Image (cartoon, rainbow, N blue to C red; front, side):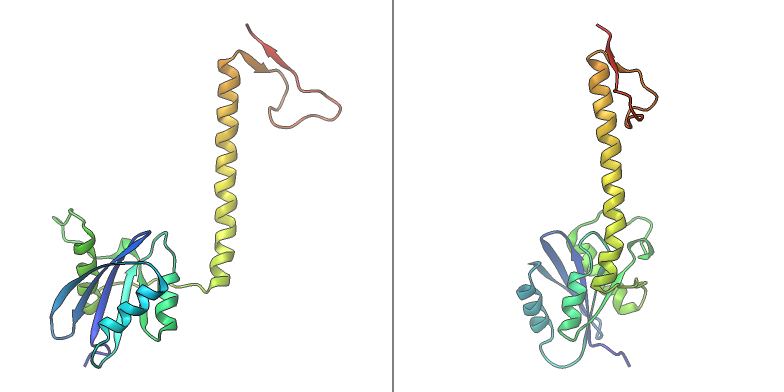
Length: 179
């Protein structure tokens, strides 16, 4: 006997979520799209939960994070975030639409064919975000330096020192204009 009576697949995007439901009886239906707000998620849970039984939600891990999962868990619902790279795909299945993705997630979730990922708590997530933010800033810094050097080069300026980005003790930076 199944632990849940309905399996809900969510195709999550920045502003909206496509929703599909798979019943244990075999029915699979698309419910449409909702906006991502706490109120809309709570309303969805109430709408899908009509009747008896337990619900289980799932969605793909992505840039939207774990906010929806945490909210569903606060509403006492089961929720799994699944690894996109481990979702079984049929060889000819290339056309992706929100509707198809939501239906596929609900069907595969009901079949137990999805691999959940570990969900960090908010503190752990914040600690993971810090080195990512630093790496992003270092990348932007490298890009800005390359852009500046290109700009100066296009205008005929060449740096004559040993290092372009640090100043040796007691020395003034020197640049020559070749033009």
